[in-house]
Image 1: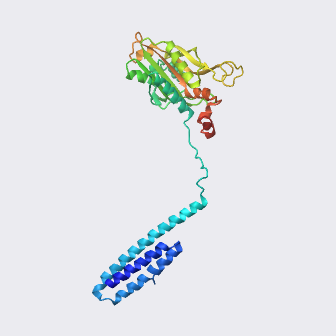
Image 2: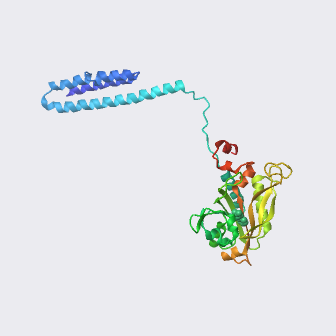
Image 3: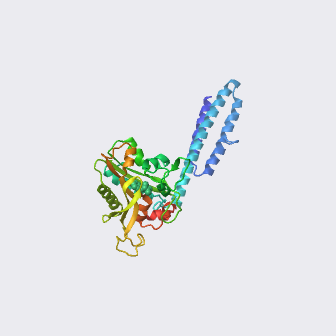
Length: 344
Ligand code: PHE
């Protein structure tokens, strides 16, 4: 038994040395065959068990198996070591780590989102809360509560995608006026950005899905001048310090008086007669606005004799066309990386 021990220890040492010195996978395999192979050294030790007394044989077998296990571990470790070394050698040959890398293409914030965020930040700075509402609305919030009863011709201006008799994809963000006022007592100051849907034929100026930013301020003593001030500030923020805002008389059932909001063409400032952006008028249309109609205030149980307010709704893609000098609104939804990259 002592003899066997000594023999195996010596064998293991020699094997360890051979394995450590093996310069290649081939050399490693030669060592394996010489020691652990069918006609290898371990096999001859195993054969010698036959010369032992029968009662000593099982223990000797176990001892040999342990030695084999240890040797196989050595072999495995050496294999891993050799492979790692080979990989590094290969790397050193083919990879020049000083060579400039390939820049992976990274995305950008979409212009619609960027404008929404910038406008939201502007209003948040002025104390407005940013709220978001559902894109599927009952007709109550979309029309009735906004002073547009079901027989009102103004409904035709909102050619909508109806889901059921009373549910539709919202054609504007104005339902958020009602939702907000029903949940909060005045004063309220909110903006509500989000997606809107209309059954519009798609062209350079129209999409059937677009984004609006709704604004609403209701308190005591609020007047039209505040509205003009806030929208002028928004346009200066988005387009530059020279921007002006003008109102043209218009009609919305939920505001009185109502107005269309225009801003000075940021490309020609009204000076270029053949401006491609504003068509020479000097003004760009952004959306609708007005003083909240008393019927709307009454609907949400605000006393119109005490409170007054204004509201506006501007198209984000419209702001985008103006901001980036883009000629076709469809470019915003074409997922063209080159276009988005340009606006980065
Ligand atoms: N909701 C109107 C539209 O989409 C815009 C608007 C909002 C007008 C608020 C007045 C007040 O056309």
